Amino acid sequence: DAGVTQSPTHLIKTRGQHVTLRCSPISGHKSVSWYQQVLGQGPQFIFQYYEKEERGRGNFPDRFSARQFPNYSSELNVNALLLGDSALYLCASTLQGAYGYTFGSGTRLTVV
Amino acid sequence: EDQVTQSPEALRLQEGESSSLNCSYTVSGLRGLFWYRQDPGKGPEFLFTLYSAGEEKEKERLKATLTKKESFLHITAPKPEDSATYLCAVQAIWGLSGGYNKLIFGAGTRLAVHP
Image (cartoon, rainbow over all chains, first blue to last red; front, side, top):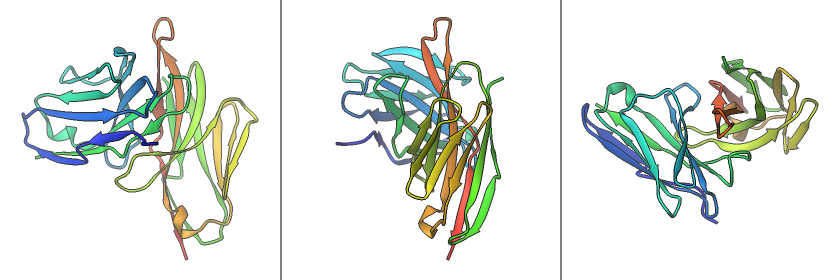
């Protein structure tokens, strides 16, 4: 079985640009969460989606948004990129929030 | 405030030298404590979930234990391939009706095992 897949694996953007990151959960998993991991720190919660609805949002500005599609895949969008948005963005899926999370390999975003 | 603190930040061991990593936590509505292994540039790889004080789980050279305030990851006779960052996270329930949950991570312990 395929695990959680994220695309792209790496990208470089300029300050002020917009970026879209994509995630496909494990087949059958209906919940997707997004995390930001800055170098040397643990992942920080951004969003949780379940059955295409936003169920939770972390302490991130409105420049960050996400959505989940009918096939349970998800997109994370970041507008007006700042240098501080440079990080590894991780997607995690789970059958339902109460159980273990499986993470993808992440998207390494560099803002220059 | 919910938080997770891991110690030490970095640990260097000789091959075969056993040790323990610590994870202290404060959280309301704990639904589970997770240990993950993360290799450079990769996503976290699930190791264990612990749900109640006194619970223990083992996998090869790793053993995780849980008390009401902390968890330990014991590494017995480590090998160089055990070198990685080990992350601890607690799962907390949020929202007025507990409608969603999230993982709160510590900063991790960077483990280096030398031959």
